[in-house]
Image 1 (cartoon, rainbow, N blue to C red):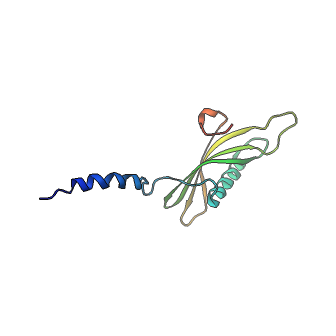
Image 2 (cartoon, helix red, strand yellow; image 1 turned 180 degrees about the vertical axis):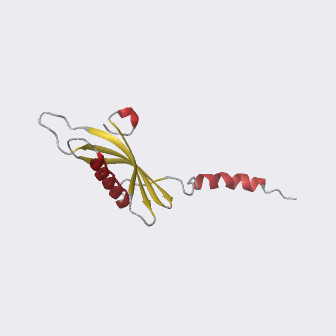
Image 3 (tube, rainbow, N blue to C red; image 1 turned 30 degrees about the vertical axis):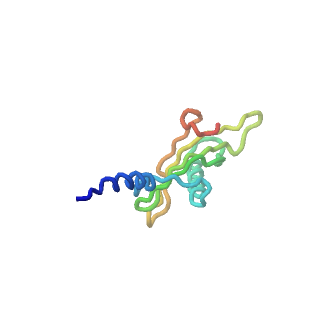
Length: 128
């Protein structure tokens, strides 16, 4: 009787390395993709609507983006934002923000979550 264990032991590690993605799980996506940029702009617009700050902010850099296919799409974005206008003699204010945007199959996109921090340690890759 021939055993298939040597064949399985040779090919199984290759299969595990080639397919590390979890179906339905969050996947890293390029930060320069059109849909990612659109979601970042949408998120910053919603941030400005909800913010009580005296000045508007704009997105300076998308640091990281993930997308998850659920009943639609769910984007998680880490974005460096900055104050659009500054008062005289003041330094520009920057924050790193994590936005989660959900785009249901048949509905409009919704901003699910905003988390912002001025602290470097909150996001090690944030270029503050």
